[in-house]
Length: 361
Image 1 (tube, rainbow, N blue to C red):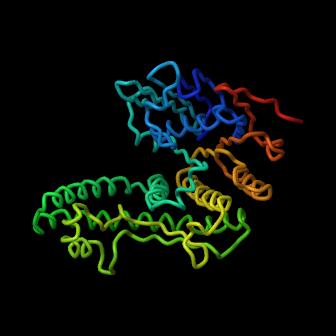
Image 2: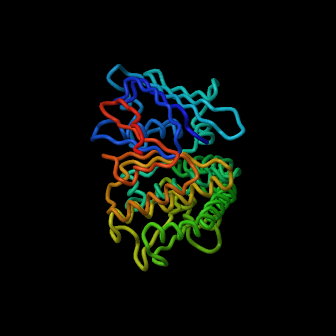
Image 3: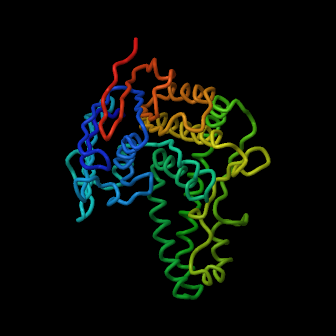
């Protein structure tokens, strides 16, 4: 998959943008508030239907009014090009894929995008929600049965939670527990398989990026306790769940635990190390998706040099050069690393305008 055209209308600082992109590795530089992060945000929105910055659709509208639109064209090997559009007005959002009405799920399936940005430290510092999201995005792209199991699980979870809030008796709660147990076990198995599949690549990339080996470990807690399975945990904790008004056992409570040696990762490593650890996870996951599907996700890297000493910048750049997919990178200025962009291009971003820069010889 290769992005070849991006257009934006009234999207934050981009009053009008029409940007052809032909390179595999592309570097965008400029001052603060020039529009670099907004560029990556537009592509993330086209893939996920939402901003990675947590902004509401209204907040994405520029100075021209309460509306915005995005369009991208991307090519696939031996397939017809795909065109995806996303727009918002005060009347709602619209998604189009090759001229037809589409859903957010269609965007995620057809246009996989992953991002490495400064806010990603939440994946290590904050609660398990971000780490579950990381796992599930990868599982979704490589396990065809995952989404159906997730839908069935969420439906049963919603029904059991409604019964709990009504203080329903055990016989009503037990109606939904077999479905919860079956699909919950499936979801946990999918996640474990994915973590196992990317594990060796993550370890190798940690060595390449951080120069350390054997200090990191990853453990997936399923979201329930006890060796007798989820069904038994649900039955055992009905009274507790009834008091709380919600189901507290299941894969919706799972946690990916990342440790450095004998310690939890939080506050044990520097922000630069956190960035490289997350990069190792994302790159390994994207490599697996490429191996399984033949399509390498579009990779976005915001503020490349932030938190990284020169040696670590070189290590990260080396890993990005080896990545088989297309990459868009932003930074304050073009460091020497990007002087010899192979099969790539350089752009200057200023006041919502983007212009290509002639390559140095």
